[in-house]
Length: 399
Ligand SMILES: Cc1cc2nc3c(=O)[nH]c(=O)nc-3n(C[C@H](O)[C@H](O)[C@H](O)COP(=O)(O)OP(=O)(O)OC[C@H]3O[C@@H](n4cnc5c(N)ncnc54)[C@H](O)[C@@H]3O)c2cc1C
Image (tube, rainbow, N blue to C red; front, side):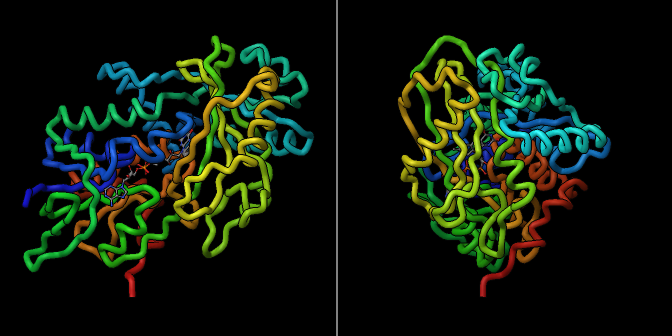
């Protein structure tokens, strides 16, 4: 049995970043990933990095987004990993008068709190993103938003962790966890067994099943996201793109209940709104996605959903209407039931931590989420900003 001081379960962006930062502290850390690094959500997402600035009173969201933005930049510019990072800025299209009212109020409210965004006329938006439709009512501009390649970026964290001495093991599925009388955890996985004093659960949409191995209920549910890509084409689109339609809807109807997270596109199998995000990647593909559906762990791409999403994207970027879809894919997003991250120490257990619940924006927030949990574990002191994501609010002991 191999001994390790700290064991991280999950090689997505959250786990890989936690391992990287712990190794940077000089701590002995082992990361176990059942597939390859970035084989789940962290490798198949749209690569959008959301950021609005620190605001007048930085909260957890400011830390996660702005902290991650800086870590992505450092990964590419200081550490020299080509993760295709670009401070592209983002544009959110406004398609109706109702969306315009929502966007205007949002911009005013966020600017008064010190965040960085602007409301643009359609001409202003088209002067920085020429292929946008002239039929828009305007666009919100988020100059700090960025983008990066999700697989390359997540692997960079794992590689940088290994370079600093972490043991990064793939093809190792954790199948059972027991507590010994000496106070250590025995972690059984494919072909191996490990002993550790500290565990970090970073298993994304599978935190629930890993929690069961530890005797706790971690209320994270898998939400299926799906995407499509065109054939590669010369550079035509420069920003991260999205639409205000879903946000205007969710601002009135978040849609959550005791078993359903907020801000999904479907209730049961019925669509309640259209959500849209995408960009042109370095290979030249235009990629878009949007749907967020509860479907268990079923990865089947819903063709009707892709068609709706393609139609929506074509309304905003009319060059798409003459093109066809070249490939589609899906992935599982880890949503908590209240929609907020779960990052901290699990109060019912000794020295077990979790970094998850990063939902639909965990690529852009994962690097700092991993850094904050690493700070907590390495120093023994909870970063004050993690009070907002305390697992005590929702993790319970299994009966
Ligand atoms: C289609 C799609 C588009 C998205 N677009 C964006 C975007 O543009 N911007 C953005 O910020 N976010 C986006 N997201 C969300 C983002 O991808 C996720 O929030 C983020 O990747 C979650 O990271 P994670 O490390 O928590 O989970 P994951 O990436 O799922 O990693 C968890 C890992 O744990 C492993 N694991 C699970 N159980 C075990 C076990 N028992 N033993 C060992 N290993 C285990 C899994 O194999 C997996 O690799 C998107 C997601 C999807 C699906």
